[in-house]
Image 1 (cartoon, rainbow, N blue to C red):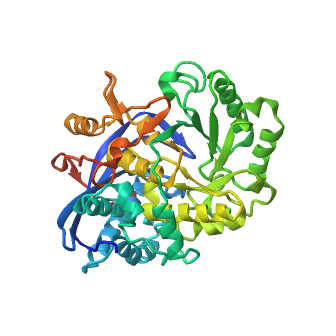
Image 2 (cartoon, rainbow, N blue to C red):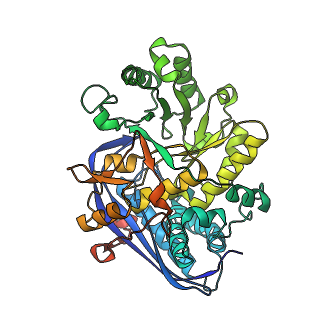
Length: 465
């Protein structure tokens, strides 16, 4: 039986994260954004008190891409999501399992945020971050690691939010997990990134020996085809086999535009280096268009949803439209990732292939990248995008002593190459050995005294003033 806990307090902090290079995806270019850090204090029945932590970048214009909103307004939406979730979680005063707490709050979170014009994807951010911190505290209280704890269903995950699954489906999936010892990095090539030459796709100092590449798309079939041809020519020079994924971040207007790109991939000889390496295409169309557009003949290719994954029902709905996969991201909710991976395993056992992927928008070095990496390794995600670390310079604005503490506790994950402490990549892979530490994939917590409180979100009137 899963241990029961009582939530004592939740505190939010943030610190700046200046990017080492501009990151352009979709219609936004990011040069800096705050990093959220969460501290949760719980009491575990029969075990006493414990503190847990989580972290994530507050990324603008991804959770909500509405053109009338500024990047700062969309970051404030995430802050509001966090504050609303905090109130709902702290209102639950009795002892309950970690998943009880999540399940009791997620519906009210979505509904409350909707009344404030916050879309479901942004609404889920608050519970996602709180849940990770609570789980970290719970694992510490019972003195076990993430992989063993989740295999034993320490959170008490059940099927109440996924009626298409049975309790047995979930138990069988969790108990059968064998965490990966290595996860390959998938190197992101943003829309403003260099393609050829120094700092380009084939520069080993830039891609760190990656065998997988994630290529951003702009939504213009002709422009994307021209750029993909250039990237493909560079990949041909690597001297080792590699695979690619494409990510449009909702920029393809409709199926006709998407079909135009797919036709080019099928028939343009200059795109053969991409077409022969292509694993899947991620979230090509806007989430609302996606839900209204069966893929038809395009379903023969591997398409996945990401931004359209804003509820526990999103994956079954996408499957009915012809999609084969869905992304796992800690910022969308770890319990939903586990449920979706359970679905993919169950559906695949019935004959067709379905899959969960590892996509990284908000994972900065330290807590965020470690917890997301552990989740992927537990689910069996063999390669994962790691762009949060790639675009921010190592630990960024994290105090040196804190970065050094992470590096000392997780020496298989970090190294100081003379230009600061950064992810340590071993022949294109990240190692997961030290993630077996007691707690949620970390032996270290942030220096809480060096952090500033989460900013209070501004009102629309303040933005217009």
